[in-house]
Image 1 (cartoon, rainbow, N blue to C red):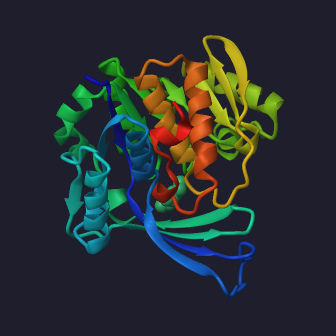
Image 2: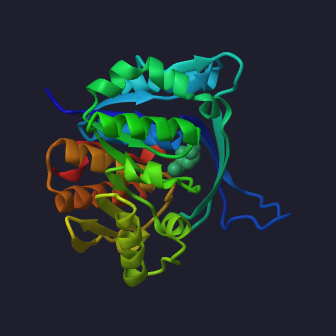
Image 3: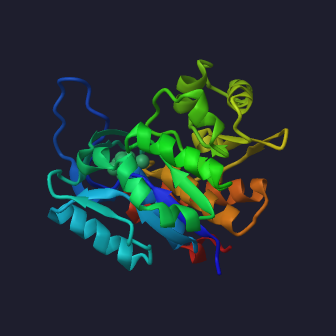
Length: 301
Ligand code: RIB
């Protein structure tokens, strides 16, 4: 049996408008192309991991509206175990408004809806899913108390927890200590450490800071420059293939989903990060979040 990956996080429907540049405050830009497409950092990571060959269970909370129901149908079609997904009839499903410019850069505003109501009580009910998981992957689009609960239970059960701290917020030392692998981007690493991460040197300092908080492995993603990895006291810079970016939305999600799969296949850390970089580099060449996640066969792996 394949080791099982449990992704716990958000599910959104993304409303994407493509414009030449990102609008400034008060500015209206005409002429954009519109796309309504499945998203949410948790769901994106679950879909990416499943497409890359992982045995994935996803826990999220949706509303009982059409957006939530469509998302769950899609997860089922992707081969994801959806038996632990919660529904809240009092809340709308999550929605994200996304702008993507000609360079593939984006800005995102999320109406969390039901995602903000995935509670500790829900996760207590989902205990069997937690117990059977080998790797647990989380982000920060659900309540922080829920993330903290899962990390502490997972640590007590000896499970590997990957935390993608996005969107970033302050994290307690207790929570950080229960995480096995953390994967911030430059902005998130800067916010978590107080060290402005702009290059390999500052990323190294930030990685040391996070490692000293008790996290065994720190991976700081550096966009087109790759990822800085601190693992077993060794620093490595993993390069990312050069591509023309069309839409960087969910590149980090694809990276994290791919990383979880590679680790579940017992790849060594550097090979796992190389695999994750390759998967992310394919995703930026396509529009959309889940829509951009590559399949295993596309990575020649
Ligand atoms: O990481 C990209 C995702 O962030 C989008 O799919 C959007 O839904 C937001 O959650």
